[in-house]
Amino acid sequence: MGFDKFEGRVALVTGGSNGIGAGVGERLRSRGASVVLADVDDAAGAAVAERIGASFVHCDVRDLGEVEHAVETTVARHGGLDLMFCNAGVTTGCGLGDDFDLASYRRAMAVNFDGVVFGVHAALGALRERGGGQIVATASMAGIVAPAMDAVYVANKHAVVGLVRSLGAEYAGSGISVNALCPSFAETNIIEGIRPFLEETHFPILDVADVVDAFFRIVEGDGTGECWYVIPGRQSEPFRFRNAPGPRVDA
Ligand SMILES: NC(=O)c1ccc[n+]([C@@H]2O[C@H](COP(=O)([O-])OP(=O)(O)OC[C@H]3O[C@@H](n4cnc5c(N)ncnc54)[C@H](O)[C@@H]3O)[C@@H](O)[C@H]2O)c1
Image (cartoon, rainbow, N blue to C red; front, side):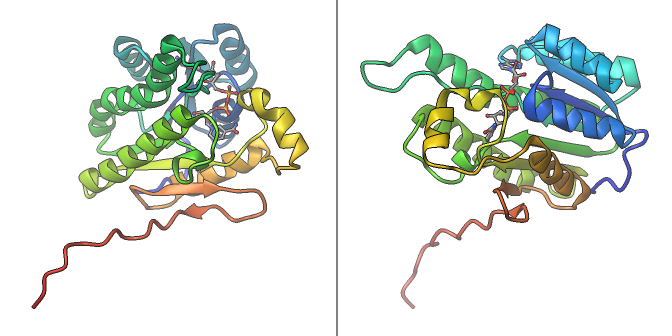
């Protein structure tokens, strides 16, 4: 099921204008894949697409119609879709106390969770047309552990992890894999708000290239329903969730 080569493969990358999405798009292009970057940041997306030899489509992942349009555009431009990377994400910008802001909460849930749900839904038909393919969603280490910061982000990344684990099992044997990329803090725009904290605590920050390396370990592998941690100084691997206790029946 894993890709051993990327020539002839077609990938759609949401959140592809910056950071991890742009890095993955660039590596996919250098390995021979055709790439469409989808994002709300049109200027950066067009510039990255031109630089790496990809193309760009405007897509707000909160809108199912726009995600479907991005998939249709990809298929129209390249004849199919093999790899859907549901990667767009934002931090929340509010807490649940006096600083709660309904619009910020709705935006974070919609980009980080609806965006993945819509991406999977929109891509499935095109992937089946090719006889199978891969879906990768960017969750986070915040989807595996529960840091005491941005609880809404922690919750929607846990939701992505649950979605991926469940869909991986559901689609097993269908030729479609579903996996999650779970980075720790990486050097992109998204960490600007907590950069002072990271510097103060000397928290090690990943290079985007480390996250891209982990992405390729996922798509070259045969796993599904896996959530791969990306941690500075460690080889990325699927996180081994401890089994929950099942029912116990006295004999
Ligand atoms: N950088 C980190 O420390 C880190 C750690 C763990 C997980 N992540 C996750 O990685 C993913 C990529 O983030 P990044 O670190 O590259 O940050 P980034 O800010 O550089 O990139 C995020 C991209 O998502 C796009 N985006 C935002 N809202 C969108 C929308 N509604 N529709 C389409 N695109 C939209 C932005 O324009 C941007 O291009 C996110 O899901 C993020 O939560 C990042």
